[in-house]
Image 1: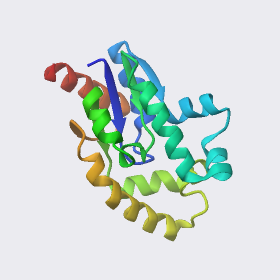
Image 2 (image 1 turned 30 degrees about the vertical axis):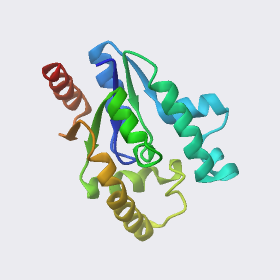
Image 3 (image 1 turned 180 degrees about the horizontal axis):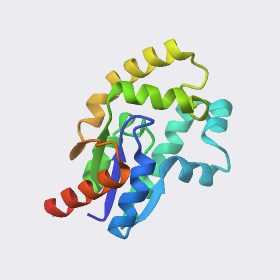
Image 4 (image 1 turned 180 degrees about the vertical axis):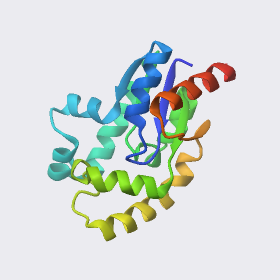
Length: 172
């Protein structure tokens, strides 16, 4: 596996787990949102505010195409990445995809703490956030479920990274 792509809803721990997994495999770690920010010279929030979600999804697609050409990387995708264009099919064709499945109540709790850093939910109150996460996850779940591995977190990024590493090595 030259490329491992972590997919899942915002707040599922893709970046935290991705760093640990990359370290255990001796791979580089790339956070797709940080990659886009570096390429564009703007934060994700600034891109959303100035150009909108549709423009962001085009930039995300361009970033995906670049990242699919890299080797020995663990990539934490944005939460919506697999759900647009034919991104999920491309990820599965060119990489090993892992859906980090997290209990919805845990996701909502995490997002309440960090909502201001998430453009799609920053302006929502607690009730709206709950409703939005449930609706958005219902739409995204069919895309996420196409991953080669669906992994339910055990709560510890260190333990999860070790388990995923073993599962990846067993599947070779």
